[in-house]
Structure formats: C-alpha cells, structure tokens
Amino acid sequence: MAGRGLDYRFWLLLTDAVFAVEPQCRRLVTDPAADHPIARRPDAAVAAKAGGAELGEVDLPHKRAALFVYPRTPADLPPISPAARAASRT
Image (cartoon, rainbow, N blue to C red; front, top):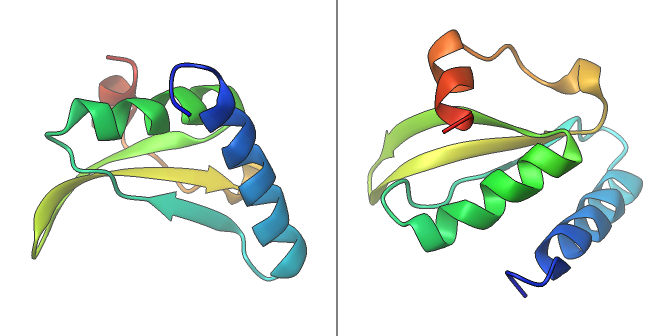
C-alpha cells in the first residue's frame, strides 16, 4: 500500500472507524521501530497529512520506538516537546 497513497487513505478510514465506534477515544498512537525507516516513513507521511504528530522516541522492552499520535480533534493533540517537534520535521 505504501508509495501509492493507499496508506494515507487506509489510515483515515481506520481512524474514522475507531473514533466512530469508540466515542471516548481521543487519540490513536502508533509505535514503528525508530531504527527502521521503511516502517517509520508511512507513519511520518500520514501524520503530516492527517493532523498527527511525532511525539519522539521511547525505549520499550523489545525495541526503540518512534511514537506517532493521531488526535480526534486538534484539541486532543498532547503537548509536544520542542525536541520532538524538530525531529518530526527531519
């Protein structure tokens, strides 16, 4: 799906469906491997188009992850540190 714009359309359909079924859900989070550009690139592209953001990187027990958030509304976007905001532009 990646590279043909389908990942973006699929993600919008998925987020809309989750938000429709779960009215209490304020945001969705993804955690692709931080050191895997093929896994990370679609999340960064979709976040840029869909009003999401990269929150930064975290160490999990099984990997270092890049966290991306997709809010229901702009008000549901959590505060983002300046360092994470700068990283999401690279």
